[in-house]
Amino acid sequence: FTVPAFNIAKYPVTNAQFAAFIKAGGYKTQKWWTAEGWQSRESEQWTEPRYWTDAKWNGGTQPVVGVSWYESVAFCQWLSETAGEKIMLPTEQQWQRAAQGDDNRVYPWGDEWDAARCNNDENGLGKTTPVTQYEGIGDSPFGVVDMAGNVWEWCVTDYANITNDINMSATHINVVRY
Image 1 (cartoon, rainbow, N blue to C red):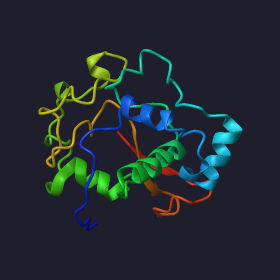
Image 2 (tube, rainbow, N blue to C red):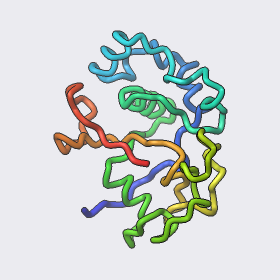
Image 3 (cartoon, helix red, strand yellow):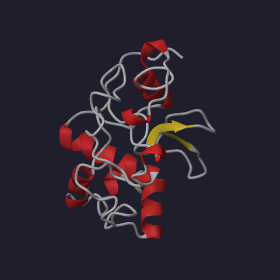
Image 4 (cartoon, rainbow, N blue to C red):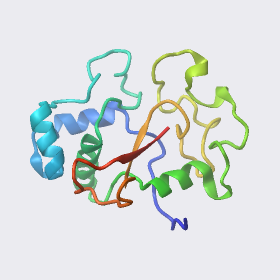
């Protein structure tokens, strides 16, 4: 794929950043949600991400976990309005380019696995780490942190329908990256 230049966040969204969405009424304001997302939020009675109150996962600088694709999109819609600029989940191709660079390396740091460069099962922590913990040693060629390990990340891409439309039916399968 040819992936034109784009902007991507340097770090995954943290609990502290997501807390601002909650505080701003993110789970109570329908305009930030897709129709399907709002319906899911209502039927599942979401008021915060899963594991939000679990100390193992909720440190302020840890990446937010337990969010559905719908919650991720709502956060982006809210952040777009708050920041005054278009912010959305990356496409699968954008995420891949940000992680591998233009030389298609296997891992963000190169072609050889190095467990010391990211949070992974080998380190035995059993929880996420602050998003800056591996900065400078596990960065992608574009300086993006935590693109290997630590947390699964949603992409906007619907794998089954090969589209980036946020208003697809709930039967879609969206891409996650780790």
